[in-house]
Length: 155
Length: 300
Ligand SMILES: Cc1cc2nc3c(=O)[nH]c(=O)nc-3n(C[C@H](O)[C@H](O)[C@H](O)COP(=O)(O)OP(=O)(O)OC[C@H]3O[C@@H](n4cnc5c(N)ncnc54)[C@H](O)[C@@H]3O)c2cc1C
Ligand code: FES
Ligand code: FES
Image (tube, rainbow over all chains, first blue to last red; front, side, top):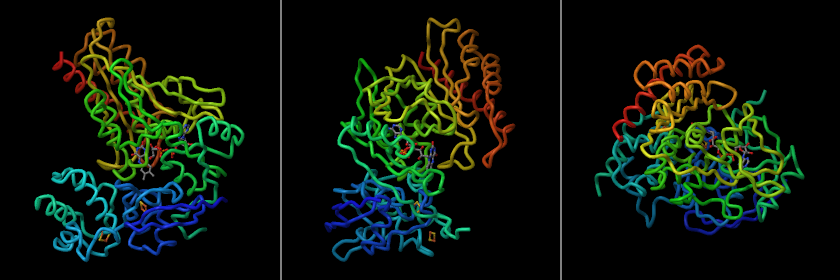
């Protein structure tokens, strides 16, 4: 087993880590950096609870090796709020009641943020398609979709 | 029995070679214990399931610039191995000239998985269910392969040997897939039948592509590829030949769809029975041919 020294930016702060080859980005975030907002639901690319932004694009952090992220920039749910203010999608999901147990929420927020960044005014069909990889066992999705719509129509 | 339904990855060494030649040599020297990796979305699943035990994963993303998507008005489209599926989908050249490729990618998994997953990985994984393989077959894809003796070309149609098996040798790395210029007036569709509308592997997948061709007796050429109905992605040659030889219409399409279904040898599995799969190949091939035929006529 080989170790690798990697440097990556996480939510704007530069981190240097020694990681074994097989360590996923998800493990590095949770176990090395104590950023436990990002969840491990399935560890298999199916549920989306581990979704983070890697160089601005959403990825399943359980399906990405930490060593592959050398030199990259990562944003987790902890990095969405800034200057004491929630991201508009965070406000909207609270407003619409799109959170129950909350386990899917970090991934849902990241996928939604990424959608709104690439397409500020998505249709309902586009919202649903963008969230296909974020499973939620509680809300039935309607309130999550309403939250994204709220942000989409407010700009 | 392990209580952990979702184990972590087993130990391995991640290798990032400096060049394609270094990568090919390393892979050849460690045949059986090293494998090339792009997005890793198939590899990690197999390793966590305990099916693969490779000691080395050799990252071949962007070695010697193999992550480029380039369209040349004379030569056609070249997709570097490291180009992920989302990049394929948003490429204006793909959307206007090879929209079938974008449609096929769109049917795979989820947005965040497609940030990692690649078409070349989908092909090299050689699953009969690979959703982008049909489009690559009907569009006449040719693979660029780098091995210990340098580059060679492999037409995709002769690439697959069985589930997970290809003609690649130890040290071989697919660096790109190339597509010729699309013929005038072409249309393609990918009809994927899954257990839900999005994101599941297919029960069957049917790709149909067609265009006017004066050299065919019928005046048209159709290409068909079938997923999840044989040990390899299947091209029903009898059906294709029938469509080039007989005047195109409802009856010819129906007969060709029957030929396509007869060429399959599906299995029963959790997603569907063999009998159901055959019936669906017949229906979806007919539907696909009708759609393509209508659109090719509209363009003509
Ligand atoms: C949750 C989930 C959902 C999925 N849904 C779908 C789906 O709907 N449809 C579908 O078709 N697939 C699906 N897949 C499977 C997988 O995502 C695709 O097959 C993907 O295209 C693989 O690409 P990759 O770049 O990740 O390949 P990798 O995992 O990196 O590699 C796949 C195989 O190809 C070999 N290989 C990789 N690169 C090369 C190369 N350059 N030269 C030679 N050999 C190489 C590897 O050694 C390995 O055997 C899903 C997977 C997951 C985890
Ligand atoms: S934990 Fe990564 S997709 Fe479920
Ligand atoms: S709120 Fe519980 S899984 Fe989504």
